[in-house]
Picture 1 (cartoon, one colour):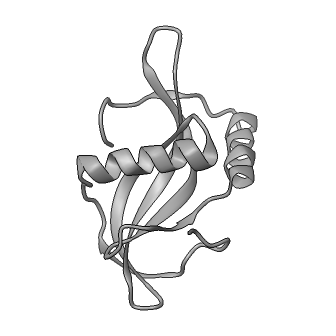
Picture 2: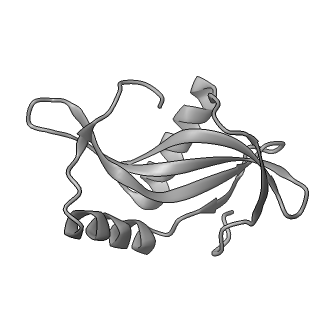
Length: 120
């Protein structure tokens, strides 16, 4: 169960990393089920939280497939944290925050950019 406030990161243990296909699939399903379509978890970091727990922090990109069947992303609109031991989601940006951040990017004139296939 995710909380309403993001956890406090006290240290980045690994700036960039990779997650397994199983975790990637589980996060895709979590976002689809709990936040709807158009959200992709990306850019995993291993972090230490203020409660001394280790977690995987990932950004959430607003993604879609354009008319040419190219995966596109608007930009980072939220975050999701996964407990490293239990692999349970401990925080995910709310649907309202994600929607508001999409609008902020669009209003700022940000244009969607192509995204790589697979995990990123």
